[in-house]
Amino acid sequence: MTQPSQETLEGRYRALVVEDEPDQRELLRYNLARNGFEVYCAETGSRALAILEEQTPDVIVLDLMLPGMDGLQVCQSIRSRTETSAIPIVMLTARGEDTDIVAGLELGADDYITKPYSPRVLLARVKAVMRSRSKSDGNGQPAGDEPIIRHGDLVIRPERFEVSIDSKPIKLSGTEFRMLVLLAGKPGRVFTRAQIIAAVHGNNCAVTDRSVDVHIFWLRQKLGSAGQLVEAVRGVGYRFRDAES
Ligand code: CA
Image 1 (cartoon, rainbow, N blue to C red):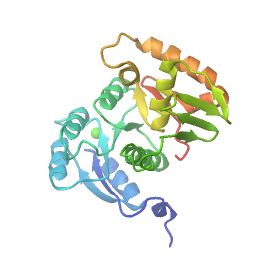
Image 2: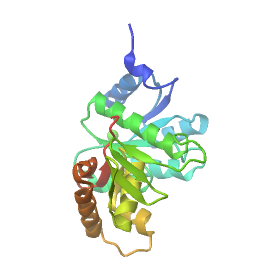
Image 3: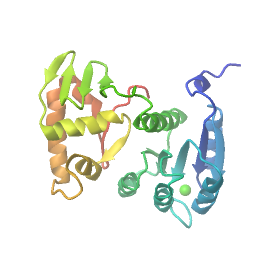
């Protein structure tokens, strides 16, 4: 028997699953294990933090609704410790928990999945956050070269302040350009409007959520057919489509 999905992950990766419901936990364990992950499971947040004292997994799948310490507190605690601060986190949420999703992303979670979810979506999100983290560590770029972000015909040169589609230059405002670099630099990752504002203008800026929507609207218009790569995530924010997932 061959396991093609295992070949897409080089080597053996470790995942920590934090979920209090036994059936859900077993489903996560099963789906990750059959895709080549070594899986640790925790039924509570405090158990998860205890495991993290001993192990450094490559990814954490964290349910938000946990008894005792909730997922948001667990997320905050993981991000505040040097040893665990860089581990990618995918949150599991129920439908309608938009406020919690926004809070989780702002506390440092990389992405989220809404229950019920398919194993395919789970794997795609897990792999996307792992890729995104390893790229931002600088592994994806040869040292000394100018960083270039490419998605099909779309080419972004952040240092030169240039964007082109099919070699034709596109004129963007400074704000639109910085938003594009932020989103396209981490494809698949959702950014809340507050995170976009902070990245583009700094934390002490009076840019409103509504004006983010306006800038994104114009950014998409100017990108033409590539504009559809910038996706609105209802109730949460925006993401750049991850072509590999
Ligand atoms: Ca739960």
